[in-house]
Length: 167
Image (cartoon, rainbow, N blue to C red; front, top):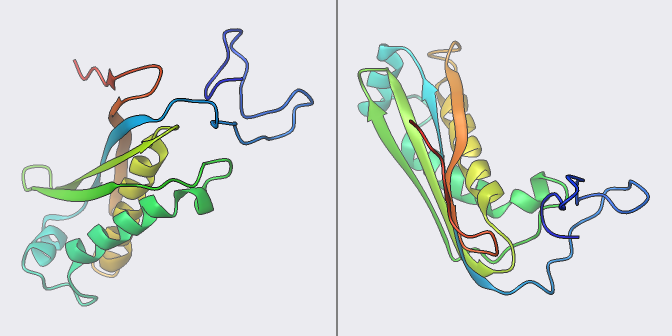
């Protein structure tokens, strides 16, 4: 079985008897793999102003969320069953403050040379960074919204490169 659905459209993370199974990637060719995921945390303009002024009681929100996102990507196989433990060569978490929409946009890039992709690691990095922003600011704004977490692109592997069409 391969690392996705097989040609008959059957799931490959289950064995012949229907039991959950980690996909064997030992015969796959190692290649450079990269994935980028994004998401956002929307909030009130007053909460965004607190973050920008570094005036949140719990500390530097974006610095803490960056470290949390990197750690989250590295811990992906401990959080998501059947994910392979990977030797990530790069994890970058970046933020863009969007004053017009009163939100913080989050981007996580993961990269390695290996036999399986890093989409789940990038998604986990974005998710954990977003949850950290929420945690640090929830006293000021419990109505924050985490949203639109998605893979933007992936590179490498047998299936090659893929980019989300945002038309």
